[in-house]
Length: 207
Image (cartoon, rainbow, N blue to C red; front, side, top):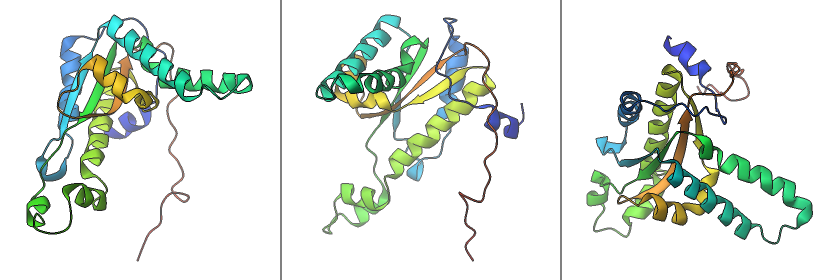
């Protein structure tokens, strides 16, 4: 599959078969992720690899419980909406592989340069729009494309992070902050290829 085909073949998959993913394929996905660019080549990441079904179900329960707590006052009339949110927040529950991506602290040269100023490292990072988090997005995209190339389905999961504290307790927190998760597995059914979007609504050429 050439690159253009690969980009448009990638789709968010939310239904997986039970077929396990081989260790060699898992390692290919991880290597692809770790090849992503990062600020000052700092590689400020850690990836938790989760294949234990019991652990994944504990994670699902933690997310569902947290959502119930958050929306306890939503009322019965909004119950269907809450159930939909639960489904989209726990799409990882049936996947044979879940990757938990952590962002680790990093040191940038600008931190040292401004160490005697009134700017904290956190303020500098905010002014730079958090390049460590941006780099995590690049890592995830690399993994999604690598998964597509391996014939796998994938889904970038953000809704589950409402239960970040609980998930970190279950997974174990490797010196960083859980920022996102990826559900991976062989897709159940055939996904429709993604059509290219028209450029006009999203692109502005600046002279």
